[in-house]
Length: 460
Image (cartoon, rainbow, N blue to C red; front, side, top):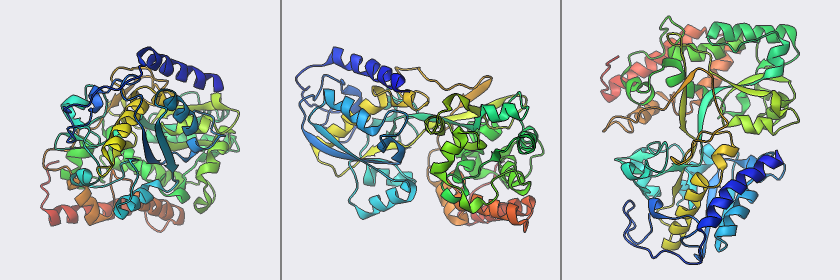
């Protein structure tokens, strides 16, 4: 593991050294952002510009594991050490949080928030209230993949350090011990595999991660591309779909995603007591073969590999839904990092440099088994045989926040990390006090009522 880290940094650092200079490019009119005296993201030459800039900035993010010296991958301390070899006078203070999803909102609401932070779930119309624009989409997208993830009116407010995909983390040895020779491709095959694991091994077939909360909302992410094969579904069609939680009768769409979880819990194919799950502890449990699989994004793979001595046992499979004989997986940005609109000029310039370095030179995406962020780089360790990667199309003009409005009306938080509704689904499945179809009917009613209340036209 250590050798991989050194190699990744050697590649990045050698690129910077060849460009290194002692001076800074004079600031001029920026082509993209509103601060005309800043050198824009696309114009910064890493390793050459601003190597003598002095600034102290802060960054807030969710990767608590990278703050630990015991992390098996590259740590924040190591990234900063490499960055400071080229930018010795830019001091970056990094703060992480296990409850980032909620605490990031609290930071924003306080008005006293970090120079750089992963943009939490806020309405896109509010991006400019908190974060400066990196520039227009047409310009930034030439340098950064997934630049539309945090975009409003063609202005880009967040840039990711890595991109991930959707699937199932699994222990290959446990699956093999259970006699499973091919990864399941349909809900029926997946449930059948879980039953074999329960019968033939001592491993927990599927670990829900109920207690962590945010891990439950991950299930929502699979209801778009992975369940439909349609890049327009999640951010364009869902809003206008009548009863989106109905049974389409072909093992696709949101109904089939949620039913996998319900059936697994109701069938005793998950942990004995969902209330006692442990997010940090489960990584080592899976590494050591005590858990067979978990439904998580690809970002979880390096964390679980690093959690014990059995990294080679950890694999990643596509979510078990097949559409007309083909499987799909969403390729999309992880947290996108925004720059505090209230920061000083030097702080903003330093933040632009650090964000660009992390996205394009640090090797972060490769180290974290992610998909490339920089348009100049195609290297990745992640691959699904026979699976098509598709990213969601952005919302239609004028409907950027309509899904958020529907979620606020229903409190379901569809496609926005609906932790509570998935936890309640687990509870009903375990208690057997509501059938799965009764739950879906109740969600459909909430959705229909919200559409009617907001005057949303149903087209599908």
